[in-house]
Image 1 (tube, rainbow, N blue to C red):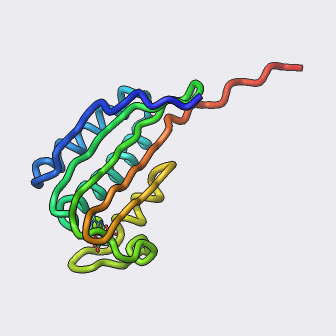
Image 2 (cartoon, rainbow, N blue to C red):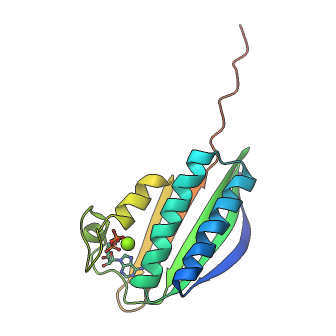
Length: 146
Ligand SMILES: Nc1ncnc2c1ncn2[C@@H]1O[C@H](COP(=O)(O)OP(=O)(O)OP(=O)(O)O)[C@@H](O)[C@H]1O
Ligand SMILES: [Mg+2]
């Protein structure tokens, strides 16, 4: 059964300094759940890009973090939301190299590749929510010898 233990942290994203807290929080939460170093870094990198989008394109917002569990597997779910202008063309925004100005256009598509699950909801004129989830990968259990 899939359970969502509820939101454990809510972090504002209003300044460059807040991006530092977001990275630090995600690193610590992932480590505590048992993510290995490489997987922690993937999630921190994705969170950093998404938080920067929330700040730069969304005009600020927040990140919510929650611990999710599915059977014996633990995961971390991060939701970034803002009440900014929204994304008019999601496919275009997700494609590598597209930026509405100034960036490299790698943040959204890049972060999608770094997590297990990626959902964007955006309503032009009212805001954007990006929800990502990654699961702790554990080595498969050794098989019983026949
Ligand atoms: N939260 C958001 N609100 C509004 N528009 C967004 C949001 N996030 C992304 N976008 C749009 O999607 C485009 C692509 O985002 P992406 O993160 O890939 O590139 P970027 O932020 O422009 O550059 P960078 O490579 O520096 O991240 C942005 O240029 C912007 O137009
Ligand atoms: Mg970006």
